[in-house]
Structure formats: structure tokens, C-alpha cells
Image 1 (cartoon, rainbow, N blue to C red):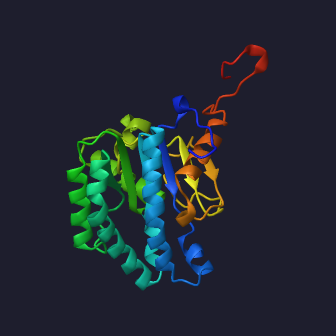
Image 2: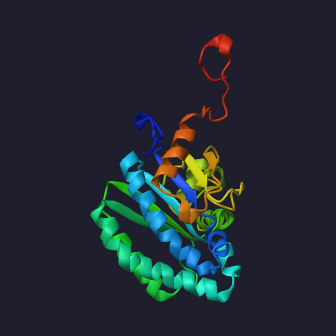
Image 3: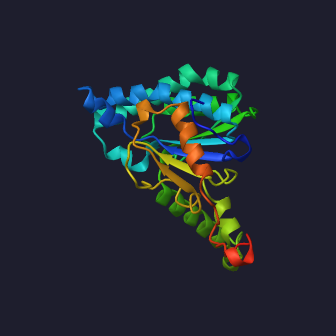
Length: 252
């Protein structure tokens, strides 16, 4: 991909992306913020193709956060309609590429249009047996909300006698997350130059590597994805351990 060298034997299994910068991209061009969101669609699908080419198994994208409801009503309505339209237009393409589509977040929120929930269900059902890559749309998602919902779920299980308090461990907590089968991301990418996590995958990203790129999301593409993966491959992931050179490579 371009002039970037990526070691195909060490590609991250799961890449998660915070797609940031649509509004700034639009503002710089004298356009409405919604036009920035629309411009982000080609970037998203170029990245899908790039991820497939690299052999990435899981790709998770932050499409709408629980905090995004606080935006202007016109922008929120646009985003709801845009997601309906995107799923209608792109569902078949994702299916043909062998991509399994999953959504994670609070999908029981009454503010989400019924037609969007229908399109989500259709896309998940159509692509359920695909194996080339799993693409997760984090929609109406917040990391803190996910943890609160998981705690409520465990509390209900304890109250009903189905779960003993002393039996709660990390595996139990994970089983109550929105998408328990989703592996933790190896790499989290945030576009636009901002360097914060924005309530994204709070539990799952505990040991993820982060790459922050100044590229605004509509300008992000498969080559920039490859560059981020190459930067990830330069990291030394120790998961809390440390290497003592005098003792060899064993973590201490």
C-alpha cells in the first residue's frame, strides 16, 4: 500500500477507529457539517477494502456516540437518515466482500428511528455467515454506558439468584458487555489530531496501542490505514510486563 511497508505476518487482529474530523473538514471548505459526514463515507469504504487487503479480522468504527444526541437536532436527524441510507446502499457490497456486520450500543433507545433498527437487523442477518472480516458499528455507544449496563445486568442476575456475587470476575463482566465475543482491539486509531479516547471501548482498550493521526476522516484512506498499522508494528506490547535486558527477553 503506497510506500508503506507492513509486515503481513504481524497485522493487528482487531483495529478500532474513532472517525473524527468531519465537521472541521466541512468548515474548512465553507460547507455544512453534514456534508463532512457524507464525505466520510468514501473514506470508510476505502478503509474497509484496505483492512481486507491487509488481513485484518475485526474492524470497529465509532459511528454515533451516546453524547452525539447533544448536537444540533438537524445534524442528529441527518445522521439517523444517513445511516439508514448507507445500510440500504452498502449492505449488498459488504455482503459481497464477505464482511459480517454487527452493531454494538444501546439499540433499545426510543430515539432511534424504527426504520434504522430494521436496516440494522437486515444487515446483520444478511451478513451473519460471512467470514472475510467482521465490521462492528459502534452506534449509540458510550464506554461508560456499556459498563453501567453490564453492571445492571449482573445486578439483576445476582438479585434473581442466577449469579453469586463472589463468582463475578473479569470473564463474567465481559460476558455482560454489548458484544462479548468481540476481541479486544490491538490498535485504536483516532483521526483529526485530537488525542483523547472519547469514551470509546473503555473496557476493551485497556491494553490497546493508540495511533493519533492529524488526517481528517474524509481524507483518511487505505494508505493512511497501512501507515498506522506500520507504526503499531514498531511498538513493543508488554501488557504490563517489562523486559530486563540482563535476563533475556522474558517479561518481568
